[in-house]
Amino acid sequence: MSDPSVDAARPRRSHRRIHAAVEAVLDVAAQKHAGTLEEIVTAVGESRRRPITVSVEDLAPGVWGQRREYDDHDEIVLARSLPSEARTLAHELGHVIFKHPGAAADTTTVAAEDDLIAYMLGITAEPGDDAVSDADHDLHEWEAEAFASRLLQRLGQLYRRRSWRPMLRYDEALG
Image 1 (cartoon, one colour):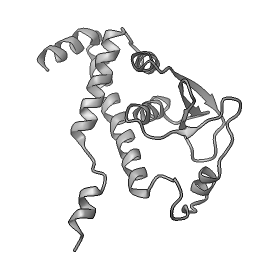
Image 2 (cartoon, helix red, strand yellow):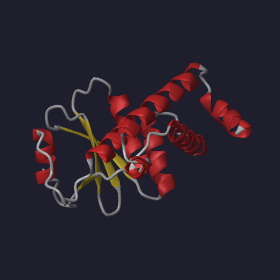
Image 3 (tube, rainbow, N blue to C red):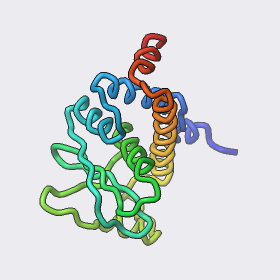
Image 4 (cartoon, rainbow, N blue to C red):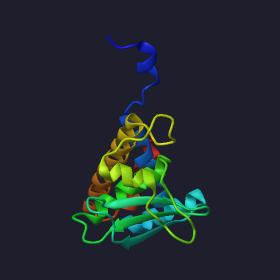
């Protein structure tokens, strides 16, 4: 039987939190007249007063995207030849929206750090390290993926209607 105090401290998945985040992003998109996913990323950065740049690089095998944190901005790095660029961009935006810790980036160079190398090799961190716990990491990945799914679903619905800004305003009016 599990300890209730441990269960209470365990991170929880919340679909309500995902839906609220997507609706907030779509509201920002409507206010900033952002019509593409790339424009939405820019609009979110503007609304946070912390720009988000997007770049394409060669990443390690199996890594499709990465969020990097700089002192004055965030960067979403996409791997070359992605199966779904929109999906990966939306996923990484989810990490930004939920303020998940990104890869710390030096302003002059981005080097592979020991914990990233260990993660890629499947080596766990030593107890007491500042690494994100497995439970937190799983929650962060779930939130980012759920956010990406919901955002792309909503954008697909809005694009099918051809004029999605009035629909966003209608949704906003209904609460």
